[in-house]
Amino acid sequence: MKGRFLFIVPPLTGHVNPTLGLGAELLKNKHEVAWISIDPQLEERIPNGGTFLLLDADISEADKEQIKNEILKLGKKAVYGLDSLKFLYDEVLIPMNAGMLDGIKKLIDAYKPDIIINDHQIFAAAVAAIQKNIPYVTSVTAPAAIKVNEALPTIHLWEGDQIIKFQKSVGLNSDKRLDCSKLLTIVYTSKKLFGESNLDNYYQFVGPVINRGDLTDDFDWHKLQSMNDRPTILVTIGTTFDHNLKRQFLRKVTEAFENEMIGIVIVSDPELFDYIPQNFIVCRRIPQLKLIPLMDALVCHGGHNTVCEALSYAKPLVVLPIAYDQSYVASTVVDSGSGIRLNFNRFKAQQLKDAVNEILHDKKYSENAQAIQKSFEEAGGVAKAVKLLENILSITLKQN
Image (cartoon, rainbow, N blue to C red; front, side, top):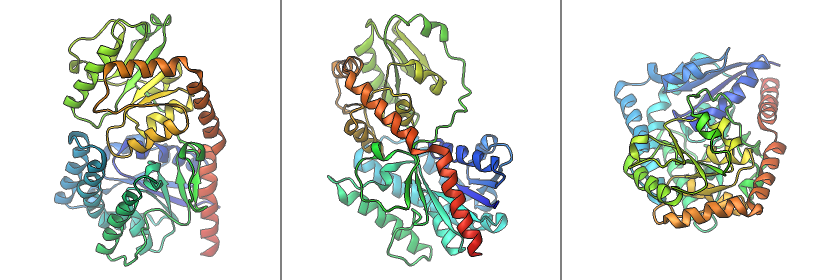
């Protein structure tokens, strides 16, 4: 039974990547698959046989510019903690979804999908699916969105209120948030890493779906090879934070590890360094999935994708969350025993050095990382996710 699947995604790489893996597998199984996005660059990444539907043509120039500006703010504005969550909804997600809704509806009418798969942050897609009476499934790329923080339960309620207000503003008069489908919500982590929860059975944990198409390869492999007499650490704090923030961080990393018998690979613009120690390799971009297996540990900001990639190779971590869902991700690393958390704004160079040495020399961290690696493998990955989607398709087509 073949069907037509439509992914609706935000212009954020970490949210798009898992859908490319699922879509490629669905195409292999002879289904039709399309993606809707406001990002024209996504077209070149669509798997062979897939269809790209650019929202650009069905959105006003004013709305298009507004959405692009709000996305850019994610990378430029230094906001932390709870303020970052308010910023994310008030200045990014709500305007973006409001600007996308009409265009999504027009493209749904044109493509006529059997099943819609909405990213959990594109709740406009869930609204459109309900209003068009088309079954929808939700793709949760940031599991913090469905995790109730027991210490701060009001945060989850506040997020839900923002989504419900949006739903009502566009004519969907329900007092329940509908961003996550009760038909099926796919979560890209394992239950073991996610932690205890009382979630309904329609939440299905499939483990991370990691995009293996890592094409960047102008890396200095020769210099890395010259460091094989010492542990090597990958240091990355992502691409979404401003340069002043990164400079302060890099100075502390330099102070912690210069002249140490540790090799440091850092993802950064080299110009942000005051100077680069001999035991450092600094690159703007890296072939991350080729490098991680060769590393002994990672230092990162707690991006969900980076953490999952590290744990997929059983690498322990030091995590320094900055904003958005990173505090939650850091807590899962600590709770699973796979790493150590430091305060990004207050950590000292010596604390970072001590934390790295601890995860390198205390075997419990790598052993716990191996347990998470195993839980990812057992969660089923792409194969399980595709089987779940095909089950929903089968039920849908029989009902029609």
